[in-house]
Image 1 (cartoon, rainbow, N blue to C red):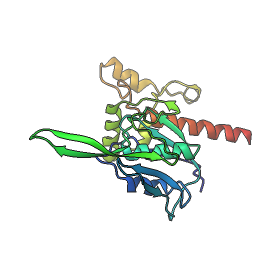
Image 2: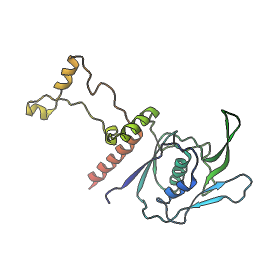
Image 3: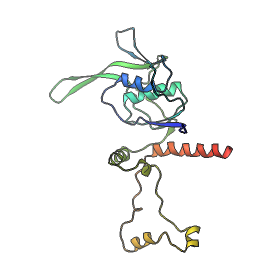
Image 4: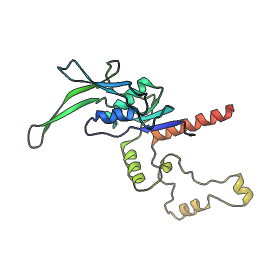
Length: 226
């Protein structure tokens, strides 16, 4: 397998904490029978333990995590454990620190009281509640850009289009030798006051772009050493 690095995008919210899902996903990155995290409840001295289980497929190579303010509690648990136990790189924005289990109680026709009934703590007892995960590389991506990219890729557009920006054709040495002008279509549209494909800045997923750029640079340096 030539894939050396896995990019895991955790930038999505969850309505409620699902600790079993977090444990199942983490089990693909950690050896079996490792204590992943604990659930601590008020008035209960014995926390609920979540231990990694053997999986049919595992990943033990490099990991890049993408996180931001939309990262839900499951994503935060995954990021917190991998940040502590591996040498993963985290890119994006600080997470909200909502690693708790909530209970909702209706208190009227249009009001709900939400309060925490359990807190997630790591293997050493530390908590990221109200602290969040701080990325190694701060790279903000707007909510609007993320939403648009998600919608467009769901409708069939290639994700590559939002990572590798298409450059406007420009005159170069090859065009001079061939006797062609790659800029002619652009200038004809501009002279006719018509829109061109390059008028609006492209929608970008800056966090994902940052991750891919790092992988490209690393690959280039490794090839250069050879």
